[in-house]
Structure formats: C-alpha cells, structure tokens
Length: 293
Image 1 (cartoon, rainbow, N blue to C red):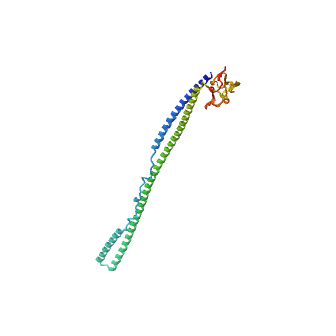
Image 2 (cartoon, helix red, strand yellow):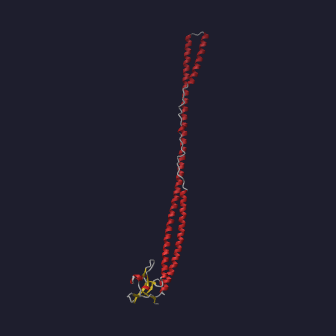
Image 3 (cartoon, rainbow, N blue to C red):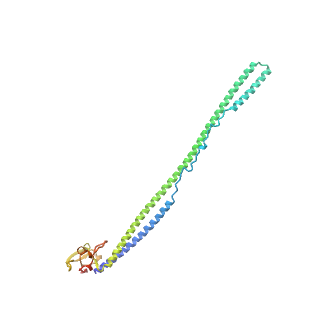
C-alpha cells in the first residue's frame, strides 16, 4: 500500500507538473510573440523618424536691396538757367523799348538791374522748392525701403519659427511614442523572463514527480513534519527506531503505517526532495515500510 501511495502521489505530481509546463509554455509563447512584435514596432519608429532640419536654410541676404536714396540728388541748375534766359529776354526787350522812345542810359541801367534782381529771386525760390521736393522724395524712398525690409525680415522670421515649431512638435510626439513602445517592450521582456522561469520550475517539478514514481516502490515519505499520531513501537536489528504513524495529508496514504523518521536514519538512505518532504529508501535499511491498518 505504501508503494502504491508513493506511485499515486508521484503520478498526481506528474499531472500537476504537466499542466504547469503547458501553462508556462503558453505564457512563454505569448510573451515571446509580444516581445518580437514590439521590437519590430520600435525599429519601425526609429527608422521613420523625421530628419533633422536647418530652419534657417532658406533665409536669404537682402542687403543688396538697400539703396542710398540721396545718392542722385542734383542741383536745380535748369531752373536757374531758365530764369536767367527769361531775365535776358526781358532786359533786351526793355532796352529796345528805351532806344525806341529815346530814354536815357541811366534809366536803362536801372531797369536792367531791377530785372536782374527779380531774376535772382525767382531762380532762388525755384531752386529751394526743387531741393525740398528732392529731399522729401528721398525721405519717402528711405521709409519705403525700410518698410519693405522689415516686412521681408518678418516673413523670414515667421518661416523659421514655423519650421522650428513643426519640427519640435513632431519630435516630441515621436520621442513619446518611442518611449511608450520601449516601456511596453521592457514589460514584455520581463514577462518572457518570468515565463521562462516558470517553464524551468515546471520542468523541475516534472523531473521530481517522475523520480518519485520511479522510486515509489522502494522510497516513501518519512519526514516527521508530514506525520501525526507518532508512536515508538520498537527497534530494528541495527538499532533504528520503528514507529507507527498517520500521514497528515491523506494524499500520501490513509490509515496507520509503520516506518522510521528521516532525521534518525543514516543519510545515505534519505532521499532529499527540494519541493516537499524528505523520503526514505527502505531498500537500504533493515526496517520494512508497511501499512498496519
């Protein structure tokens, strides 16, 4: 009955380990697939990032458009020439009149001087007006050039700032997406490591359960911690203590059994079980494991 209990216990362990292995394999497959998917997504995001741009690449030199609006100012000589001609004509006409009327030379001289003075005043007035007009025109041209330059500079500055804004906003979104995907990849890889560890644990459980079934005929759980109602009933020929006991967990067997305690026998007969209670290989000692009732 004890051998049967060991075999049954091992078989149950094999079934449990098999189920754990399947779950671990499924978890590993899912985690591996998610990890591979996120690695591909991360590569795609990295390869599709926008190229770095120079927002000032299209800015042009507009200094060649500046002009000196006073460069071509001239003296109003035409007005003076015109006035001089007019005065000469007037003077000639006056002299002709004086000759025809027999006037004195003194009168002619006075008239000529008056005409000359008048000519000078008119000429001076015209020159002043033309010079003022040219000055006003030059000032207007200067203001116009400044306004054009300011507008062109404004447009260039707006273009540069627009490119910087677009690039910066796109870069922030791409970096955020890269960080999010990288974080998901870290989680997936953690899941994959956990799945691999679970698979290794399940494999170890399987090996232990198989070993338990293989050794079920000769080895039985005899760890004091797994027993209750323990009573000393005698000694073996070699002096080992023999007990009657019951298992606390009935999966190891129901009823009263006879055997030893693992903490009281030679270590070569003890079978260590990392995932549970220690066992005894009764083929190596002079005590028989058996069910009493």
